[in-house]
Length: 190
Image (cartoon, rainbow, N blue to C red; front, side):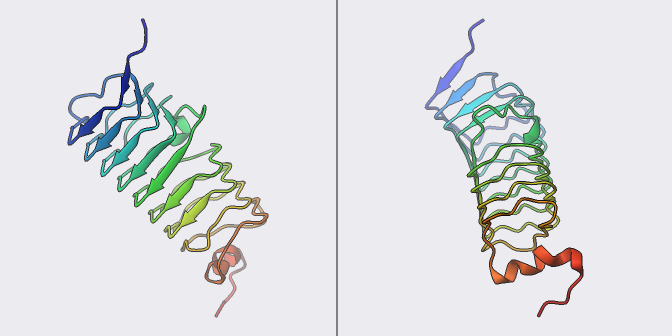
């Protein structure tokens, strides 16, 4: 059976937690003010799509493909992006609530996180080379054997990154971020 392809469609104020989104390939589609909370988006492909003011909290995304997908003003609590299809994975987040999400072992080179809340997010063993974290709250975010080379944290805050277990060569930090790099030493920095 051929896969259904849906192109250039705008979905607005749809409640996909009650009526399931059709299993298909969505290309250049826009989802505005839609509710996907606790729904199942497994095995769906999104290419060049935008999600704006959507709630995707606790959504199942097993083998879901996100190829150049932008999330703006979205609630994405508890998403396991590590279960998604990582082939050509490309994401952008702006003004999003991503608490408790997981990016375990994903290649996220050049990913942009802007004005987002990333509390308790799991970046264990992820590759975030050249990624930027612009004005993001990273309280209790997990960075463990994470590749952060050339990543930009200059305007982000409340992060703790251990330079001895993460690769941070040429990463950018502001002076205000130094306590987050030295936290394990229990220093008093003034």
